[in-house]
Structures are given as structure tokens and as C-alpha cells.
Image 1 (spheres, rainbow, N blue to C red):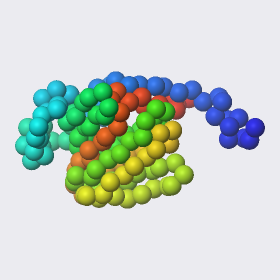
Image 2 (cartoon, rainbow, N blue to C red):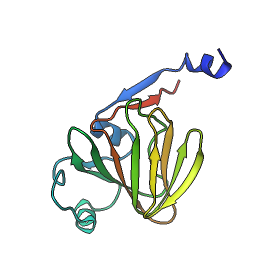
Image 3 (cartoon, rainbow, N blue to C red):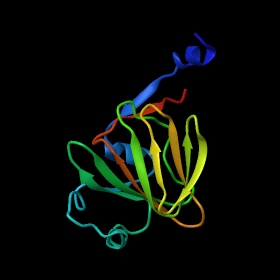
Image 4 (spheres, one colour):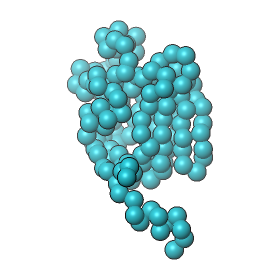
Length: 152
């Protein structure tokens, strides 16, 4: 067994599939999972007006196959390093500039109209960068499990 695997055996992990708790632990306290869910049409301009200043998140799609959440954050905000053991995840960048750390790829800078894909079991970290808030539309399986390395 190589050294990396040996070290990994001693890491403790935290798993969470509760979207409200995941968002709150990432600093997003204003979360609406029902108002915009599964409507035939949603307008980003209207959602932004109703949700107000970032950070916020709203669920747009939720079914037995996939879920989609709009996440708006300020520069410097993002999420914690994590992976999903049971699902790929992708994002459509709606506004702003973001940096993704993707294990095995490194840091990628993306902006409006870019699409990002991270395969299951791949560590990733997302951070809004630039001068203004950013909005990303995250799409993955419903109630996806987030796995974080527990800080010792």
C-alpha cells in the first residue's frame, strides 16, 4: 500500500445529504427549496429581485432523477472541499467568475456561459472570484451525498 492510501485510512469523513444543512455550513443561510421548485418557467432576474443580496440558494428542479439548485455567492465565498460518492455533478455558470479546484485537474477559472463537470468520487472546491457576485446552477442526483474530510 502506498503512503497516500495509508494516510487516507486515518482520515475521518463527514457525510451530509441535507441540502439546507450543506448550504448553511457553506455560509448560505438564505435557502428556499419550495417557491421556485418544478415550475414550468423561472426567470433569473425575478429570482434575484425576490432573494435579494447574496448569499442565497433556491431549488429549481427536484425529481427522482436529478435536482437543480441556483446558488448565488459573493466574491470570496464558495463551498468546502468535498466529493460525491454516488453521483457526478455539473454546473452552468449564469453570472460572475468562479474558480474550481478539481482533484487531478487543478484549478480552473470559469465564467458566464461555461459548463463544468466533476465526476463522482472526485474532490472539488468552488469559490466565487472577481469583482461581483456569481450565480451557478448546480445539477446532480436529488439529495446527493456530500462527503467532507473532517478537520482534525
